[in-house]
Amino acid sequence: MMRRASTLVLLCALVAASLLVTGCGGENDGKTHITFWAFGAEGEHVAKLIPPFTREHPEIDVRVQFIPWNAAHEKLLTAFAGGSLPDMWQLGNTWIPEFTQLGAIEDLTPWAARSKTIRESSYFPGIWDTNVMDSLLYGVPWYVDTRVMFYRSDLLARAGVSRPPATWQEWYDCSARLKKLYPDDYANFFSTNNEWAPPVILGIQMGSPLLKDRNTLGDFSGPEFTAAMRAFTRFFKSGWAPVKTAQIVSVYQAFAEGYFAMYITGPWYIGEFDSRLPDSLKNSWMTAPLPGPDSGIGLSLAGGSSFVIGRNSRHKEAAWQLIEYLSRPDVQLDFYRLTGNLPARVETWRDSTLARNARVAAFFTQLSHVRATPKVPEWEQIAQKVREYTELITMDQYSVDDGLKALDREVNLILEKRRWLLRGR
Picture 1: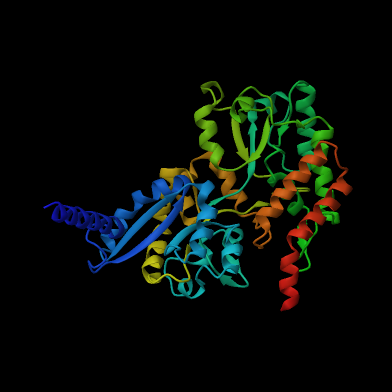
Picture 2: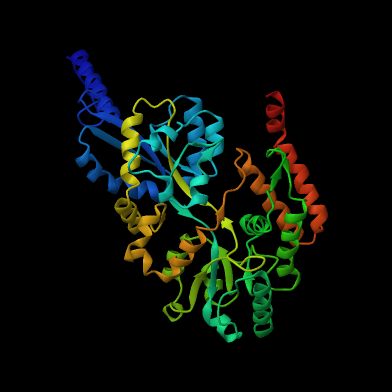
């Protein structure tokens, strides 16, 4: 009896394990089962959009796995090494070059060519371009982000500034007026201890390629980025931005208290400011496209996440059908309402939910003036070096010239393998 009971327990355990692996109905239910990895809040919310898809495609079973952002990159690399990548997943657009080079993701060019849903003309050109490597499409934009200027309209008005700055000179003038009016506070806030984007944005506005010689060497000490860094450090030397930013525990509180009036950041701050700032300031802040060196809207960074399909997936057709569904304008609008993430499809922006949101309007304008960072797998490492040397330069531990030369030396070391590979070709 004991032996038979033990056998029964073992069989039950095996059945339970099988159900956990295959889900209700098992793998032999005649359906195509696809796995979809999504990260952060997106992973928590996208599952809510799947039931309508499965009603349209009852032959497809979608299994969404939520992965925290801080574990996503390592988990993807581990899965690649172990041959266990999902059928499709969310991929930050700065990660596209790395996973393309690894041969981990499918070339979607032929899939998009025959699609009635996915058309290049439906997307912001700069965002679409982040998914293109050597003229081939490897990802389909899911949601987008970029950086614009958030500003306290009431503080600018008190300083005699009727509209947000549209050029660098207007930005300087506005900063000087605010500093004169509020000598104990600052006009701008740049988090140099953990943020690399602002100097890179100014660099691309000046026409810097950031890297040179087929992206094998740093070009941060080149004339364009050097000019941009001089412009950036002027904010600190003039007292228009705080040099030491680590002591600012809460950006929201500092913005509310008027510690600074202008801040370059992304769309995630719209909801945060709206919920965290006091009611008395609800109508005292706004967003604007970035000022440029001269007239016209300044360039910003092309950001966001895309859908990719695993190169070794056995269910590419089903995965592509899910991508097409999640890319439909109506579904993109539902996703925006769930998450606040800005939709990649331009048509979606015509809906009143977005069109009437004055703080979102600046992002729509800015998204037509964005540029991708260099399409190399090493960009994340390079960006952190930019952050480190920017902080050292703003703290006067390096001159602009010496700091950027040192930065290029570090970047060149990071790119050493890339140079070797290209020479081998």
